[in-house]
Image 1 (cartoon, one colour):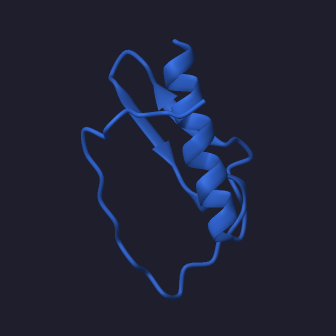
Image 2 (tube, one colour; image 1 turned 90 degrees about the horizontal axis):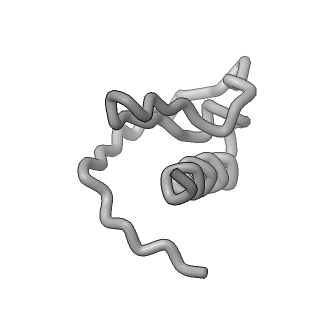
Length: 65
């Protein structure tokens, strides 16, 4: 199944010295009432794969609603 939902807003800030020392422990944060969501590698780890999984899980949660 392909997810084809264009983002309403996206931004990137490159910080070459960023290191997640203590991950959030959840794949994403989301406030359905406000229509806001946060995701990224810092939620579950510090690798690019963690950022992908975080974003995918937030997208799947949004589609499920």
